[in-house]
Image (cartoon, rainbow, N blue to C red; front, side, top):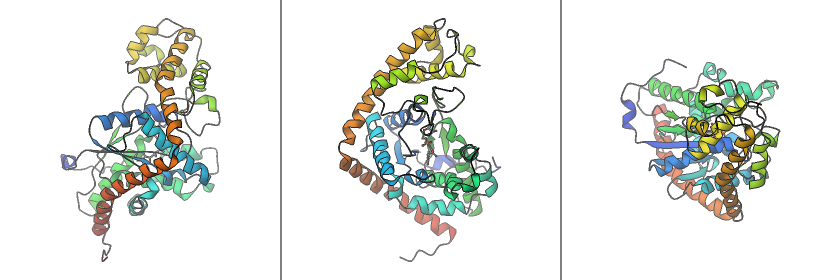
Length: 349
Ligand code: TYM
């Protein structure tokens, strides 16, 4: 995006640390699970230090009903734990409990160039066909807050779905410009981690659109709160074409709906796309969809059941988030303090 690059080898000075976030602006979807959450668990289990955040400050860039926001934040925390995040190993917290996020975001608002922000495709997509003038300033500035989320922990790796790649690239530009402008090597140049068969899960109603919690049609997505019958029904009704499945991945090229369902199967089963097609190539959706529904129910229904159990004790979820925030704050405060010092703020108390 810019010519800002870090000197070769400079990254190695930073201890590996993973950071990622999810907006609690609605229920989590299969897209969030396969594109992000499932990877979050794997990275935790690989033993790297992992910091995961429910980004409630990002959520309010679009108006949220306050009670629903609290509910969705707890529900997202329950989804993380139900999916395998262990809050004693990973740090799990909600963003607004660590005020350093907003403070560092302000510093970054003064680093980020308007030209960079004007290139952010997600802002353009979110305001397309609407009155962009009526969007919040927060929605426009939100990638700068995302950079603050990441760099406040000196995170070296950020697992995300494909749609967040440009924001992580912006984070790298902000870190490089800060380091350059203040002649320091303070912020790492973070790597996006975009891996797996389902880095872009598409709508079940339209294979050219991303599966999203904000799509008006509930049939377009699988929610992590859906029960077994709903999951199976949505997959059975998913839009497809009339052809049988091909035997090789190349045959999915101009078939977005078929490709999406095969990618979902691959990501849920842990098999490669080629292996899935070896099994189902030549067969129609009459055979493939029930197999996919059975697999999805086996993998997802236990998560939804566990979420329901966890949501019965909201005070326990709040306690976990509070403890996570304390641990996050302990990492964030010294990094924020050093940043303020670097930019020339008096720190006399
Ligand atoms: P959000 O809340 O839209 O999505 C959370 C994560 O889920 C991924 N994702 C998908 N992956 C595959 N297919 C899909 N259909 C799909 N939909 C969503 C997203 O790529 C993301 O990884 N700005 C971020 C949240 C954020 C953040 C951060 C992420 C704030 N600060 C710092 C990483 C690091 C967002 O709105 O994600």
